[in-house]
Length: 235
Image (cartoon, rainbow, N blue to C red):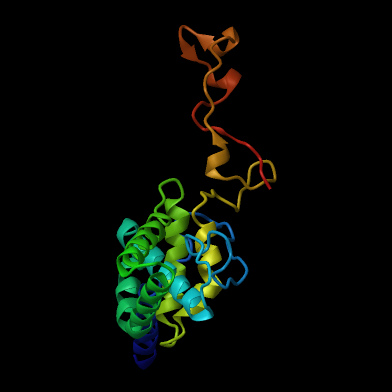
């Protein structure tokens, strides 16, 4: 009886542990590897726009704010898949990393005031920066891979010690940017190649080929299925 109870307890603990972490493959058997090199914030496109004359502290702040924006977008757009935990993790990050997020916001505000002629111009530039950053993480065609990536990065961020959110941003912002491109299944690539959804072309009926038609009905045995599409190979 003790052995049965022990096994039951172990199963319950394992179940709870699984429920507390996001699934690793919600959409694909094998997701595209999007990992990229560490960034410092000065690379083109990483923080949304160039920040001429920015200091190391200001670039770190911009990267943190990009990370926050991306996870915020994911919290709003990815609730169709609850196991990604994007909303729960984002709320946890706001609480656990409140001090660093506030400091990043203040640092960015000072940058835009410093690099503009008036306080008003600086605030306008800061607002434009924020709008551009948020809109840069909104995606439709790549929503699944973006949500999956943001879910994993959110889990990383929420387990990062306070004051180290800039390190998560430096390590994983390239990956977030890569996830804005739509990728399909990688475990079973077409013709030995992986392919993106952007290169996936639907197969349309050949109206000129009479052998494919019989009484206005498409002949699957002769000419194959329609709608399944063909993949244009890409490395």
